[in-house]
Image (cartoon, rainbow, N blue to C red; front, side, top):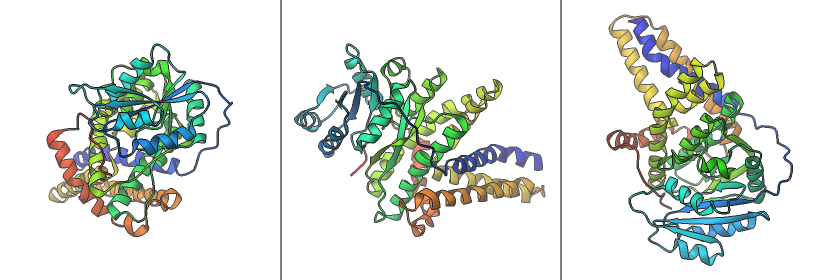
Length: 387
């Protein structure tokens, strides 16, 4: 029974250990990269579905950040509001797509690529309609992509210490995933995940990736496909993309879309990446697969608590050895300490210690969402965040 409990806990022990290692590796900022100036042409594609409330401000900020050979293309995708009209009034190029059978951001990006094919830019960049960047970040992102690798900016939610503790915790979890763990993954595996906004790549690379365009997390699947073909995405640590927070209900809506898609994609790709890397002796591919199998923070906590409780019950019922349970408790303690270190290093501007202490409440808050995903699966189309 001791051996069976150890086998039961082994996958969680491995993922918890790697989660801690990734956090520790990502605590320190990367060195600044000196890039040569580039005159690459770039199109910043903004896929927009009913974004009339924010598209004007997004375009004004982005126009101020554009370089000489950069332009904006808005894809008004199945819109029922004034998104297209407001974008045209801002003086940018707009294309409209109406296809109620094929909904989603992936289809919108494919539509943009088809439109650009006759006169393609050097770099194909993507920015969500509710996001903002600056001129230095955009230059760094385009320069990184022009060097030949898919490039990802650091994608963060704006800190709001006045928001509810649950929204602060969600913002903190977002920072852990997209800043600390991305830096850690870059150092450990030499690649990162694409997050869908603030990403750029040579146009021909996006054109060659047609299998993922119907995915609800087309960004994540696209990065995995590009890595599989020898073009692993790189983190551009001096490029940032920001988006505003939302209400508690709006936050849950967006997390349902992203986390549902992430879980679906990670179950399909994660074990395969890890096993293939292991069988071929490619440590970096194995580590990338492990990263992909780590669930979102709240779900990871729920699963760890559940499996630890089951292991403890079996150990007590059959009078087995306690060392597997103790080992997992030690690993979880290390993970919590690594999270605390990440908060001290990067997270204090995102969340107060008082809000951080409500992490158990955050886990409970997310539980109904995970139960809904278990019953109905991941969303298959646009789910907009309430603002």
